[in-house]
Amino acid sequence: MWLSKDEGFEKINTLGSKREPFLFIISYDKTKIFAQPLDSLDDNIFYKLEDWRNYPVQKREKAFTFSKHPIDFSTYKKAMEQILEEIRSGNTYLLNLTFKTPVESSFSLEEIFTYARAKFKLYFKGEFICFSPERFIEIKDNTIATYPMKGTIDASLPNAKESILGNEKEMAEHVMIVDLMRNDLGIIGNEVKVEKFRYVDKIKAGNKALFQVSSKITAKLNKNWKDSIGTLLDQLTPAGSITGTPKKSTVNIIKNVENYDRGFYTGIFGVFDGKDLRSGVMIRFIEKENNTLIYKSGGGITIDSDAKSEYAELTDKIYLPF
Image 1 (cartoon, rainbow, N blue to C red):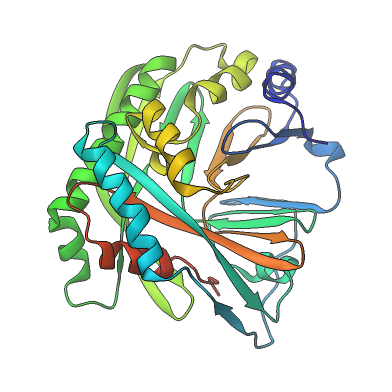
Image 2 (spheres, rainbow, N blue to C red):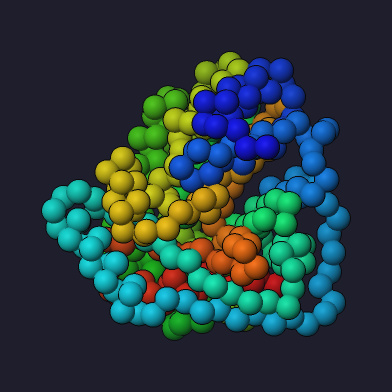
């Protein structure tokens, strides 16, 4: 079922060159790749990418329970101190630090997926789900666009939108990711532009709402891009918004500090419909580990990060978006 990195990207290239509509799923470290034509897609895989979906809309009519058991603050602070030391040493400027959190719900994974409200959703065979607010890339005609999301705040706080847009740490973090994604798009395209800088979306996060800050960056691709979709995705992954900058050294630090396997969390998934491509970053992610549900979440750390605020962001992102 899972293809290796080389096999997976080659299969994606082949499907794209045939203009055959397909779904792809790429793990964070690219060691596991899934690619299957939509007309023969396994019947226990469901996706939504904005208005592209393969399952019926259902309204939630019953109550549910949800509880979370995040790591303690001292464990989080210790990991963050390791990252700050790496930043002071010049090995990274921004690093996305994540953790596993056991959660419990009266809903099954499939029920959570079905009722979750999000732009980008994936259900994979009872193994994992994501209900992500974050696009990765979209390609329409010969234009590629990416939408890095960096900056989260509780929308109920006084002047929350003004606060996050005026926060120097958040601004620095966002600028670094925009710069990284501009460079990434420059590898595969030309005429790179930041079309929208730091716009705010409001998303429902359980019983509260969050403001999240994104930017839109575009570039022009070669008109034959459909023949090498796999190669293009390989060059762009892992996503800059969930690693950090500089990407290569930051990925190595993540491996040492996080001390767990992200798996498909912070990987990407998407659909090529034969003409256009849409994809999402696999954040807001729950997987089954033995008989326990594990939620993975995190946030970006810079030299100006405050441990209590970052810990609050980590826990705020553990929710069901009903």
